[in-house]
Image (cartoon, rainbow, N blue to C red; front, side, top):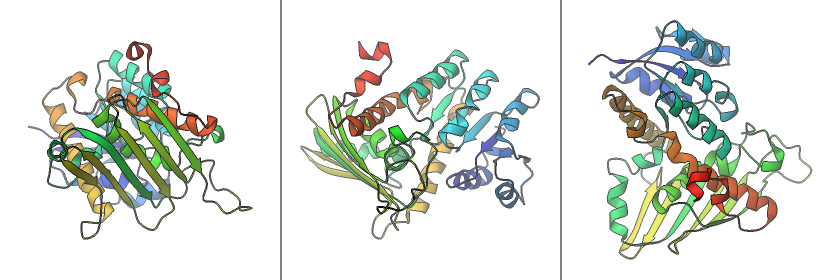
Length: 332
């Protein structure tokens, strides 16, 4: 089977992990790369035969003349939000690293565009590839009936101002670093009945803020069958970790990105990205429709609604209901 001809938007941070994955996997031929930083593009693509674009929009528009089989996107949401509708118009399947939008409304809008075009639109779930070499479901089977889920996330990233909305505290610890932990809880336990959250800043009093958002967040979740969940997430730490412990009637299970003697977080992330990318490639080559993809973006709407409820709770000081953010059919 011929390799898939693919493009990559975004070379900052995790974008370099995708770049390495796509270059070294025989299932793909990387034919187009774009990033808004000309120097970053030049350094990353010195040994590449791919067509290089210093304007991400130009790469997407170029698909009208020379279409590719899939587009991988690692841009922050406020940038990709302007580009993804163009990909849907051109029928280009998209795999997006999360978070792929900033709110439920944005997510629902993009999902509808790709569904109307009958074009695959997938958002990553790298947490499903942890722990390395062992299916997450195997761990879940050990827990029996779940009672609780406790997540702890540390992020080295200290500047993430891409949400650009001071009133909604975005682009920071909860939406950016905490997304996968929230997504894992919602995927495993369902949409929470209520969410209570508090957000704060680690910036010393009197110091100029380098971003418009929170550096630390704590969230408590209550689920429909009585389970409870908790999340503590902060950024600016020296160590990058991601850990979710599930507590059930038959024992506990832990999903983690790095800990103790295990591989460093960067290596764990690279392995997880490789797994997700390979799965997406196999599904595309198998001709699967959008509804058959393993992580269609619509499956993330409940996660986005939960995060929207958490930000609202941090603002109101009261527990909030994620269902209020869900599309109308899902509420009934």
